[in-house]
Structure formats: structure tokens, C-alpha cells
Image (cartoon, rainbow, N blue to C red; front, side):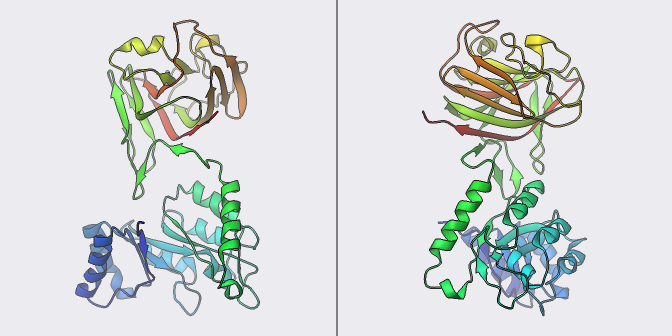
Length: 373
């Protein structure tokens, strides 16, 4: 069990009292403290979040709390350290006749914690908490907005229906199943991990010239130099679905995604034993974006204009290899040794190619789901 957030807590009135709360959080590994600061607290909190690297989440209790409206909290936060943000309680906003999605949009970039509730109606009279998806909060739209904002905090589930206080589990379970059905990447593993909101390349190694640099805030990988391979070394994959987004800086940007690299790369020999899904809009046929490089051409050109993000969905199950580019199936092929590939393994590593220093490629949102046959 891990404690990740603490609150809503009175921070005290002096630096000594506030440090006592921060020390408590640090000892337990807590990285979010929810509170309702006084006006005069912000300067000191700004100092302490930098020192402790622990986040402060301003909670939005309903009126008469001064933070009942998101615009109020936002006014206090504009010039503050980004580790001071909002603890967004969707149920309290509904009590104040506010639509949670609109509040979240207003607070974009400042949400560090979410208390997720659904309620039967807006306001307090006759309205009660209900299972996610059964009320009027529009939980699907809330999750979509948090996704658009690349929110990486926790969803704290609070259920305060007094009629079900003795047995809330059925409603909570029903709500969790609703979230599961609404989650596109359910059962996927995110290969660029995140720790306290920042992306990391832990588990990735690089072979050959060049490298990939990672923006820790956006999770965007940018290739530099080449020709090399950034490969995910934590495990080999047998049957899987790989989804990611990529963007080309120029029409002649050249890159690719390697599948089932059989062994740890120690030479360029891996290119003869693993298939590459091509990224090269200037190419033709078996060398064009979406192709299985040197082996199988895409059936249609589905690339977006240079500079726009594209989405790959690559499925490799046994010897069946399918590629979807921006929602269009461009390859559906029974894999066999062809072109540069002499043979291919039943399992292996995944890798991203950096090709040259003149036309970088960008990757983000890399997810894989293993398929158990």
C-alpha cells in the first residue's frame, strides 16, 4: 500500500507548523497535500514546494469556501510555482451548479489532484452521489478532458451517498467498470514511464550513433543523429498490439519502428532478423510510410501532412502483421522472410530508429498490449 495524497489538511499558520506537515508527507512518500490556503500562505508555500518537491493542491469545497469557483483559485496560482495547483472535486462543483468539464478546461495546466464524483443532479437539494456514468457529471467527458490535458495525477474515488453508507461497494464497482469500458488504453502498458508527472526513459537503451532526447514534461521523443536504435529493453514481446504517435519534421524524414528484435543489439545485424514499419513520406511502395520495409507495401497513402501527428496501430500476432495508419488499415500480411529480412523471431524487443541529423522524427504516447493466445 502506498500513500500518495493527504488532505484536506490545515497547514497551520507559521513556517514551523507548515514544515511539520511537509516533513510528515516526505516521511510517508506522499507527493500531494490538499489544503485551502489563506491569502498570506502562498509566498511561504511557494518556497516550501521548491524545497521539498511536494505538490500543494488547493481544494474546492462549495460555498462559503472561497475556492468554490475555479476562477478564484486560478487567480491565486498564476504567478506561483507549477507545483501549486488545484485539487478538483467534481462533486463540489456540481453542488455549486458548475459543470465539471468547463471548470477543468479553465484550470488547464494547474490540476494536480482530482476527487472524482458523479451526482444525480446539480445543486444540493435531493441530489446524491451515484455510480460513475449514472449521474449528470458526464464522467466520460471529464476523463476525455483530463486526457487532452495529459493529466497524470490520481483519481481519488469518493462516494458519499448516505443511503448506501453501509454497503457502497456495488455502486463503486459499477462505476469502476464504467471507467474501464471508457478507457481506450485499458490493459496497455505505457513504455515511456512517468514519475511525479515527469516522463522518463527508464527501461530504454540506445544502440549505434545518435540518440533520442526526451522532453520530460510533454513526453515527446526527438531523434538526433543516427543511424541508431532506441530499444525497450525491459522485456521481449511475442504477440502484441503497439500504438504510438509520430511526427515528421520534413517530407524526407526517415525513421521506422522495429518489431521483435531477437537479441540485444550489438551490431547492425538486427535489421536482417526483425521487421521494420517504415516512416518515410518521400518513399514509394515498400519504402513508404506504413510499409513493412523492403517487404510489403501499404495499400493506401494515409499519412497526414508534414508537421502533423500521425497514429500507428501495429498488430503482430503469430505471423500475422497488420498496420493501421490514422485509422486506415494499410497492411494486412502473413509475414515471411522477404527483402532484407532473412528470418524473424517469435518474440523480441521493440525499437525506434533515429536515421540522420537533418530531419528529426518525433514520437509520443507509446503503448503496448500483450495478446495471450
